[in-house]
Image (cartoon, rainbow, N blue to C red; front, side, top):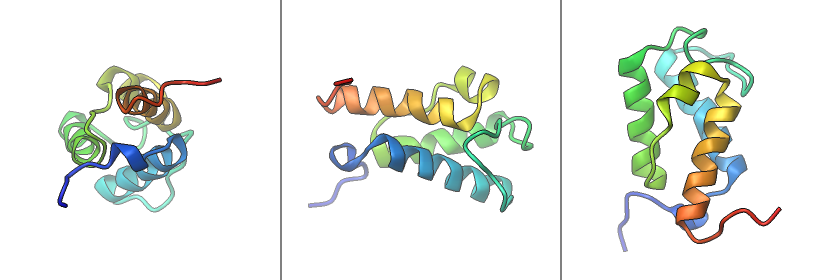
Length: 94
């Protein structure tokens, strides 16, 4: 059983944690928080595409680049989580 993404195992906390970790790795920055903005940290379009590729491989969905560029990492992760969980049939139950 080999699959490149595991949407069934994804949750919003995991997506946020990985968003921060992947951003830190891509930008070679050790001090990244969910409140940071991707562009303010030194990110650019090519790195954003790489970040989206990580998400696509892991969760089957990509980041919305407008949100990634205009908001903080937490907002980008929350948007991705909403789409991943919705596509996985879990939807929002709040």
